[in-house]
Amino acid sequence: MSEINIPEKIERALLSAARGYVRENFPDKEFPGDIHGCIQPTRESKHGDLSSNIAMRLASFLKSPPDRIGKGMIEAFRAALEASGLKEYVRTVELKGGFINLGLSDLYYRELLKDIHRQGPSFGQSSEGNGKKVNIEFVSANPTGPLTIAHGRQAAIGDALARILECNGYDVTREYYLNDVGNQINMLGKSLEVRYRELAGESAEMPEDGYMGEYIVEMAKELKKGGDEGDISESRLDGNFFRDYAVGRILEMIKKDLEDFGVRFDVWTEQSGIEARNEVETTLDELDKAGYIFDFEGARWFRSTGFGDDKDRVVVKSDGSFTYLAPDMAYHRDKYARGYEKIIDLLGPDHHGYIKRMKSAVQALGHDEKSLDILIVQLVTLMRGGIPVSMSTRKGEFVSLRELLDDIGPDVTRFFFLSRRLDSHLDIDVELAKKESSENPVYYMQYAHARIRSIQKFSEGMPKRALFVRTRLELLAEEGERQLMRKLNEFPFAVRSSAEALEPNRLLTYLNELARCFHSFYTTCRVVTDDLALSKARLFLVECARITLANGLGILNISLPERM
Figure 1 (cartoon, rainbow, N blue to C red):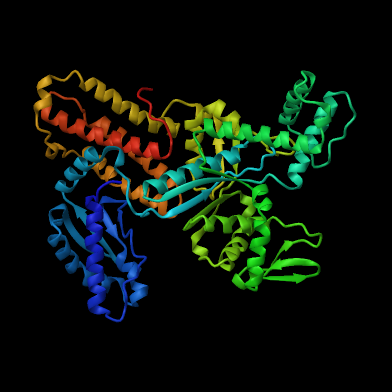
Figure 2 (tube, rainbow, N blue to C red):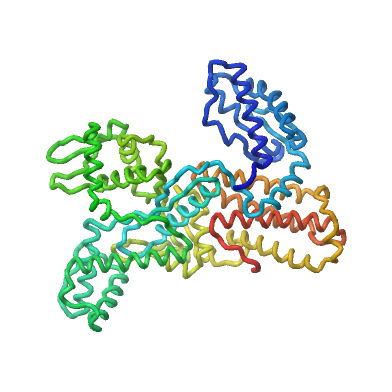
């Protein structure tokens, strides 16, 4: 991880002043432990460069107006800046509307560029997570068909979240939960058997809830070929064989699609394994002993209303079979047993009701409900010629992730999947995604990196004596240069904000803004000029922009083209 940078030092000075203010003026209060991340870049330069809402956050805790808190803190903050050697980096400290706004000096920005250049690939990283163990489960599509574009969006978001959290110092495990038991798996096997029997000239009727996709027919053809060549004997062709073959073959396809999308998993957990180890029964027994299981009308119920759920939930049906909630409880119990301090689940839009019942289960098992985050990832609509493509896995009417990867490529696919908040519905315009122009945001962003590489290649023709000119960063005084430096300063904050909010689109939004800022700088500030000292300073700035773009795109797993 990177060394402590200037913004972190400024934030520490501010927190030190805040603690001193509370200790002196509210001796009966203990400074809240959740006050961190209290400095952010301002959206408009008229409000300074950095701003803190710490007075606002302390107001309700101290039951005192934020203006009064801010006024009481400012002098202590100025003293803390001077004591820590940071005064020369902060030009102004002002209180406005309860916010403490900071104007940064030219020296600050020169030191920022040196930090970026020195830290290189580690610029933007932090130790905020302090090695906290996090389990993030995503995709977890049932092995009943190829991954759809909806699964692809989960894959992109989950992978980006894991990378962002790692960049912030968390110890992250990526997990895929494989629901390989139950009626839908049995129905998959029956569907394959029907298609196989049809190819063999036998009469077979597809079940009403059977899987109708062409992928079932293709699997049946593979299987038939194996039987014709003597690799598979007729005696093996029972219901279990068709089911196991279908699950195994589809799982191969899923893993291949994820690999080609650049998404990896550290752990694959099978529901069948959890049930085979009797972990469901063990979990229910534990809840029963704690008083959270009761019998009613022949079924067993989880008393989730004790934790704010709107009704209690059945966990064992009257026929003795488990509802889906029971193995999910056992699965989460297993995650905590493996030592994870934070658990993140990414689920589809039909799981809103699942959130409260699972948080109730986590509490009943003795854990803080805040240790579990369940994020709902909304659906994707693919637009072709302005017409949405309908999707239904059972009917076989869907667009697979593989089709989209083959059509527009992994980078563009990932970019569009990450372009909006995960809880917002997403439309992907295929025609726009294929355009190689500024209309296409991913092209525009990658082009910034390619343009930088072009500038650097062109600079190789500069006179060799330029190598010995001291880099005079104080020459960077044009408005375009200042705006670019100001935008570079926001990168670590964007990475941290994305981790705190669990929203990777925040980082992507920042990178779009950085690309726009760089293109604007390029049009107003010629980089390689007859002035060797200025050229070298601007090349230094351009390299800092390249490092930041590369780090950001790397976190999101989007490639860095050298030329376009």
